[in-house]
Every structure is written in C-alpha cells, then in structure tokens.
Image (cartoon, rainbow, N blue to C red):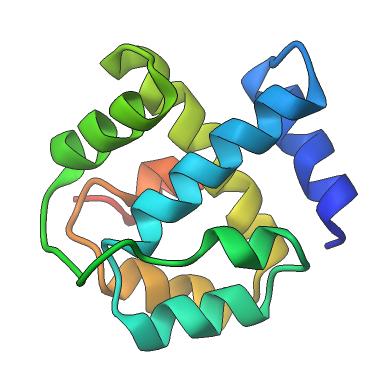
Length: 128
C-alpha cells in the first residue's frame, strides 16, 4: 500500500481534519510500536511499508516490554491526547498497518505483543 493510500485510510478511520494530523499521529503510533517489538521485527515491518512510513519505525532506545495501558500512555504523551483518544489513534493507525502488511508479518508482530494488542490491529478475536 502506498503511503498516500495508507494516510488516507488513517485519516478516514481516525476522523482527522487534515493529512498533516494523520501523518503526525501515524508517526507517533509507529514510533511507540517500534519501541515495543524487537529491532529485527521493526526492520521486517518497515520493509513492508512504503516511504516515508518506514522511517517512522525507528525505535528511540532499546526494546521495552510493557502492556496495553503503557502503550496507550506513550501514544497519548506523544500526541498530547487523553488515553481514550490515544486508543482511537492506535486503532486508526494499527488497523491500517494490518491491511498494509502480509498476514505472516502481522502474525509475527502480534506474536511479540501480549494479549490485548490485537484489538488495535482490528483483530479482536485474537485477544484473550
């Protein structure tokens, strides 16, 4: 999926007022995700996203293990939003990621995340 199509879907799903807002939110969510999965998986995921989306998948430090609430807290901190809005943002971006990458890649990413993250990717049936 080309970056223009990806951002258009994020903008529609997130009901953002502009492409710039969709880009900003997408960058934050992808950076937070990159800090949660292994560097090798980040590289694999980035290879399936077109530029400049792949550039957002650059972890800012080492991989950390944390749950869903901390993930949302970090997204909220990055966007300046509240936790509920951060969940909306994460779902808008990550459900689009799920459509943009192969099923195998999505399974690998979800395999590195604890239960509760699958709903962000539009796959609630995979959550415990």
